Image (cartoon, rainbow, N blue to C red):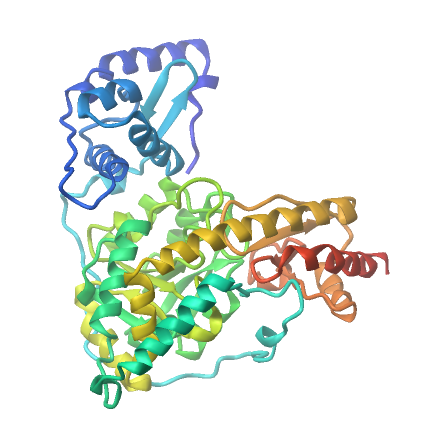
Length: 509
């Protein structure tokens, strides 16, 4: 959807806008906001949630001027910084926009279908039985690729000395108090302690609306996608996938018998209008909304609401893969798509393997209640249950605050590694590549100049001991762009510059 810049309009339209603002600016002052100091929810998040609810419900209409941060802080009896943080979140997610010297205003680019929230909703069909068979995946999967430790392979993490020591202590404690629950079969949905910790974390950090009994512990994102694909019913199982997108998700869907419908991605994320035009009755959409893989663009608020409206009306599922959401370097993480869902359309998928280390093999999905039984049954039939020992250690890690501290430290380390990689690429390969530091994630994209094919560079780089991924391989139908994907999270700063020197020699050839 096209965004309007009200401050570049012609004088007549600008005057109309100013009159609209004046007629609406008092309504936000009349709206009743309040904070509850007895809860654990941060004050800024309470303020943000109330504004978001008022905007989406229509109580605060487009172009309404919001009160000043100083005025609202005085009215609520809170610090001005809490109000500023809430407004920054509203601005980042597209609920509001600012005009220098004039104030903050409610955005107008919210899709009309989303506003009809009181109309009839078509709930996603509850699955009656899990699908258990796989078809031909139609392609070869290089299972050795992820084991390559050379820079700049993807999906790598670091664990500092503090986290390693805490992990050893918690592991020893779990073994020392070795309970009987480790000797038998456990809950296929996951240990209650871990599900509660995951639920608390998602509510606080990602704005996910869930209860512990909606959380299903998985071996990671890949198993969560597999579970969803097996449960989907209907001939053909037509699903939207992002183009370009994550190849392993696509292969898992094809293996489960799904029919892929590639939907192009632009600077606002997946093109929902084009998706509806191509496959309005698709069964599901698989999406990386907070940090699209591989391009890194977040799904705009207008597109988010448009997607939710389509899913609500058609009864489709939205599978939100929120990978690497912990690592956002420019402000607070964007709230999850699931947190906006009023109709039970979104299946939220996340992983602890990226937050901690891939060898852990623990992740989670948050299921709408209508699908929960089918998901747990399928999880049970696949491999009964996750490891109770690993679950107990991670639950303790989260409950005692070590997980949050680890994320804070790694976010700073990864930011430094990202910056070092951007500097090294700009110095050595600035004539060949265009690169910008991403706001989130564990990889960056470097676009090649015309005439430099990324596939050839990928092959030549391996000969020089460097792993880069050709982005053009990740397109299905959209016009491919030549670019290199480089992971930066698993490589200390001191090895980045030498590795880029080897990559530069590949370019010279």
